[in-house]
Length: 330
Image (cartoon, rainbow, N blue to C red; front, side):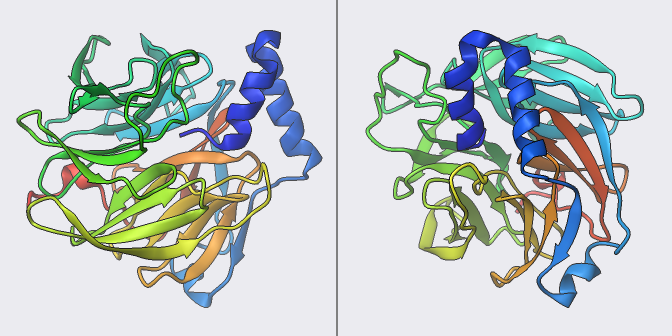
């Protein structure tokens, strides 16, 4: 779920090496004068954050971070798209432990059985990993055609797996077999169901705490859409929830997380945009590096862990996270 800026930069300087990529990304952030700051657009923003909230660096020195998943064992699973690995990042000391070397891993989630699920871009598949880093392909085709490059993944209120499939990470030289960029449901029996193909570039996705609303980003259109989620796993009444406009290289709507009150935390230009459930922009967590994704963590799931380019950051909130794989089936 890498931002367009990072993806284009990686193509341009890929031959220079990973160190140069990290250096250029860091330099870009410095020259723009980026720094951590909480910017309120509404007084309601301060119901979610302390005025003096601190941003802590959990780990750094990655190529491009994505797909954080909190584990009660005190670590995060983190994808590194540039170094082609998934790590365990221990939050107490920033120690990294490699789980698997895998071409361009992206979004991750736990399922309800605490299996790690990954969007494996190079494999063009949704995979399940065990603790030793062995993987099983859960799905890699729709109607016999290979996926583009699965990007982000969540568990739905029905226990099924939901994921987006843009062409953002379609391996170079490989053919796009599906003529659209879709959003899918993967049922427990392995059946892949297309939910919608109307987005230009579907990316992050999330369910409301009630399970009745389904959100999905369109990174190309720079907006967030919301749908009514039906009991049979289908979507209805799609409409624009909000937009996150910005210039080229500013960052786009990408990862999404939701708290128990229904507020949304969505990556966008400059950092994390915070929205209420009615589509009002409450404020922004401005970050020193452009974020791609985020996850709820800590024992009470009140901290946001943010994967932002070469680093992973943590900020404490006043909220409690809605974590779909912990919720009771509806």
